[in-house]
Image 1: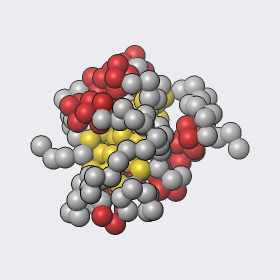
Image 2: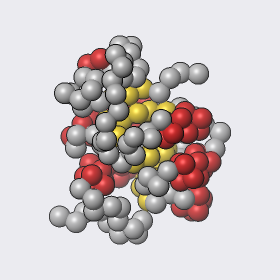
Image 3: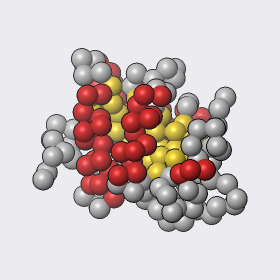
Image 4: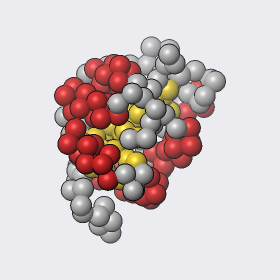
Length: 170
């Protein structure tokens, strides 16, 4: 099993250039945790979405930890004792056995908001994600558009808009 991969904002505890694929996976050198709600834990399982998410997170000053299964998600949440992440993001089309279990695990482990995303036509997955505890669901087609605004709302304390309310509040 691979380790979670951290992508951080330049100038933070670990510069992004040291945490790109193949250059080390986690903060190193004994970097201590600080109170920072700017971390996002993402269970994506899709390199395309992962590669799109990193620059979007950087736009809003957030860092991303990619986890690959429920155990890593649980570990990342429990490892965040000093700091609650701003968001847990779950891809409903990931190849992990049960993304809905991941949502329930995240909600049971921490009060952190959980956002699920998946194919817009998969109404059943949306229903199951919200039933498992997801605070918001986005179709794949809106993830890139809505993600920076969603994270900004969480970072500035506005919170998540209800699932049926557009995030565009500008």
